[in-house]
Image 1 (cartoon, rainbow, N blue to C red):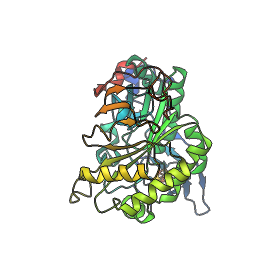
Image 2 (image 1 turned 180 degrees about the horizontal axis):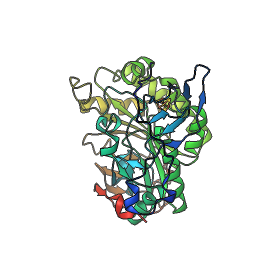
Image 3 (image 1 turned 120 degrees about the vertical axis):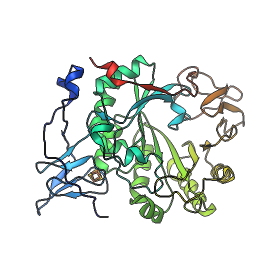
Length: 388
Ligand code: SF4
């Protein structure tokens, strides 16, 4: 695929927040941050090696993600320390149903995306070109402080794909780790091998979109390919301790056939294991697909049923009201071990270390004591309140 190329303003001041201590100085910083995953080509262009698009850029051009650019014959990140907003959410909203259930997570994103999904549900952020007006400014340390002050157990890199703000996400994760706060990636998993290894060494959990199970879907509707995503999933399961859950946005007529859902869920069980939770969520008409109808609830129930029949132990429906499909059931005795109504936990039948109270079978996931009681609240956070 051809890279989208847009001229950028040619100012260059590599300046991270380590030397910014006053609110007044934050607005003065222009951060074009040095990056490591690129190499020079013989024809005077520079290739970005961060994601499988491998954009080849001339001086002054941006990659398809819009936030990485060739300035001074090297690839720089243009959005370090700039966010599209902060909010405390239930961790179930990411969605993660088996990672510290009921706890609050501080969510943020930046702008841009390395996929071009025609069905994007966050297009105002992922397609944003209004960098200067859109962004709050936030250092890694400010984010860690805000998470701690708000009682969050984790920070989520979400709204747009953290792969494209790799350096910023890693610095935030480092600052959080120093305070005992975990990091959660919400991502399409479209990342090259070396940066993938570095990125996930700082993550504790990930919800990865498995958008479909055909390369034709990926190519036509996202401009990407399926294979690198599957490689990321296998890597996460086989070579890391990162807790993994999967999300598939089920789109009528595009990825909802019995055959595709059957093949996808069989692959998940065979290659990733029965313990990886799968979330089948409802599409709402948006972005470049306003004419496709919303996903019927029956389609999501059917997807969940296919997954369970193929051996997936924890399959969920999402974006609809469904207390059965939103709850966690013991795969051994059938007990409802975590009851949910939307994002609210209504029933808890697990021990503090995640075993079924009825039969003693372990529930896969990260459990640490009783569930949190954050509920469905959504609390916007002003990061400037946490400047040093
Ligand atoms: S991260 Fe991906 S989309 Fe962005 S410039 Fe690099 S290769 Fe291109």
